[in-house]
Image (tube, rainbow over all chains, first blue to last red; front, side, top):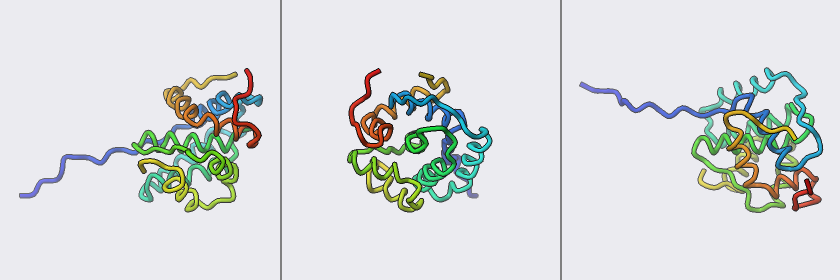
Length: 136
Length: 38
C-alpha cells in the first residue's frame, strides 16, 4: 500500500493592493519626496496585476518578481515614485518567500531601475538573480 | 507626510531603509546620495 506525502507545498505569499499602496507611501516618505501619495487608478487595476502574477506562479519567484516590477512601472498607478514602488514590492515579495534582493552597486542599480520600462522581463530576472541578488 | 498603516508597513519601511541611498538617488534623479533635510 502506498501512502501520499502529508507534506503540503508552502503557499506563495503575494502582496495585496494595500501592500502596494503602502509601498508607494513608504518610498515617498523614505525619499523625503515633496510629492504627496496619490493613486491615479482604481484599486482594481492593481488587483488585476496581482491576479496575473499568481497565474505565472509556475515560472518561479524571480520571474514573477521581474514581471511584477515591469508591470507596476507600465501600469503607472501612482502620481510619483512608480519605479521605486515596483522595486520595493518586488523586494518584499522575494523576502516574504524566503529570498532576498539587495543592491550593492548603487550607480548600476539606479540606472537599471530608472530604465525598467526599456527592459524585458528576462533582463530584469537576470538582474535580480545575478546582478544584485543574494540567496535566490 | 502620510504613513503606511497596513499589516506589512513595518517590513516595507525596513526594506526601503536598507536601500536608503538608492531611494534618495531615485527620488532626485541621481543628483543626490544624501537625504534631503526634513
